[in-house]
Image 1 (cartoon, helix red, strand yellow):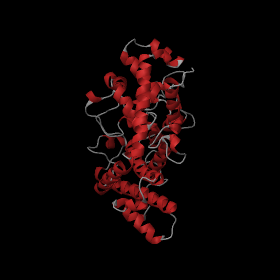
Image 2 (image 1 turned 135 degrees about the vertical axis):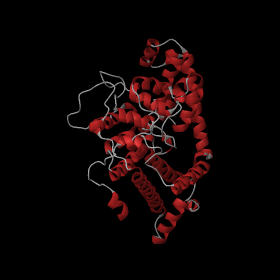
Image 3 (image 1 turned 90 degrees about the vertical axis):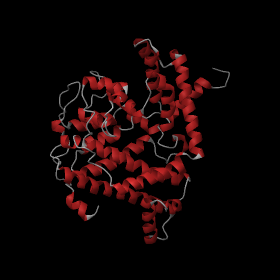
Image 4 (image 1 turned 135 degrees about the horizontal axis):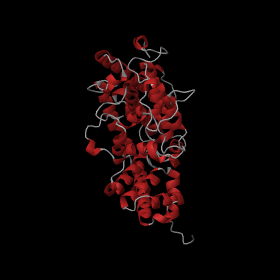
Length: 399
């Protein structure tokens, strides 16, 4: 970080006035005694880390299906990378690092097996039954599907963490488009959907953008979808690559690749910090509530950086996400997910015993059945979904 930013950064100086304060939390839906040795936001983070859904991220796809290789990122390693970037930014801005980390670690809990391909398959078959999105599924996990505690379902997280999960992409102005789970919860506890999320949630959201845009480049290079030379026309990467190559002309390809990605991450963080400091100077917030009520996001990239990110995403879509190898993997993934859903809708008694008992204990209608089956499939890891599909659709004659 350059000297200019360092002068502005409240490093190790406590929380800024506009940070979300754990001592001022709006609390939890189910009242609990305060933790003796942690803040409320530390408790949230720890509950997320200890959840079953978080452990499953180890074997869930980021871009490459887990069986394609050990070195590619999974949802778990991606979430850890987002959390590291988010904590660094939060510390510099004087925000609550624990709340930021909790949001970063939880943001992908609702992703299905096989990444976006699995989500697309499940969304297609769930369309007649209320639809499916990983954002709603994350909320379902946090508020009802995790069953670890005697006194409540879900993790009973603080208002600030749940608000950040729901609104990490900005205010929700059209409540008619709210997923059912979030609509029902907001009827019990208002998450103030028309406002922006707090500053920590805004940091976590943009840290996700930094992590997946840069690290997908890393994975794409490693997979051979493109070469370092192909990045020269991307302003963000091309300029950085040229400077590194000039300074280290004999560097090994692997080190050149890693150094380029590392420096681009740093450039994106620097741009976010400088832009956010400018926004804070204009707004002059004295509380996190001021940031929530602001007319636009306070934590943001510059206009130029938005342009660079747009070009980067276009490059990744053209050269990686739509590559024939990825297309084939995605097609197989969608087929597996849709086959499993169709089978269990027709044969619900073939669900695992606990899931079948839960189905019988609920409403006797297709919407309830479909939602429960979607919960079951969404919770599968890549490996488990493949094995389950093989068990149910094997061509072998022996049982």
